Image 1 (tube, rainbow, N blue to C red):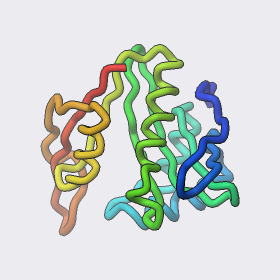
Image 2 (image 1 turned 180 degrees about the horizontal axis):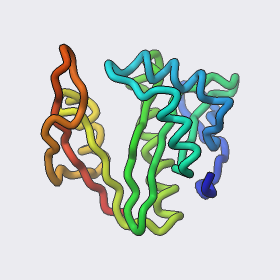
Image 3 (image 1 turned 30 degrees about the vertical axis):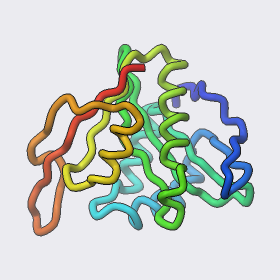
Image 4 (image 1 turned 90 degrees about the vertical axis):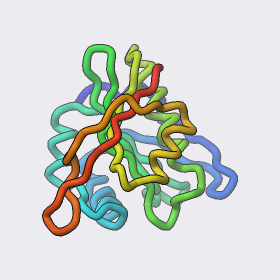
Length: 165
């Protein structure tokens, strides 16, 4: 696993109080997969997360003071580009600013690794997430047709977005 440079120090949130970022490890995967399965129609599998950790992708969790997993992200670093592969907030904790905190941590980590750009894909139907990314400063740079699996064995397009770091 590659070095996780962003400092996993406590952060403060008006509703949750003290929160903690930490490197994601194998012991986190049960809770991560539970969130993944609850918030996505086509979730990553435990194997996807295990492979990502084994490949050395940057992966961090966000927990409250009681140890409850609130969210997580995974970023792949390549040359001068960070690719945000997955970012999720537990369903009961969405719309509380935690997604922005995760984005702040992910972009901070990418900057510490001297990345110049962060890329991501978002489902065309995920209007809320696309709006959050735009408000954060991401801009659309393209589309990928039939990128994501969708209902009834169909496919859905992705919006490709970029953020200068």
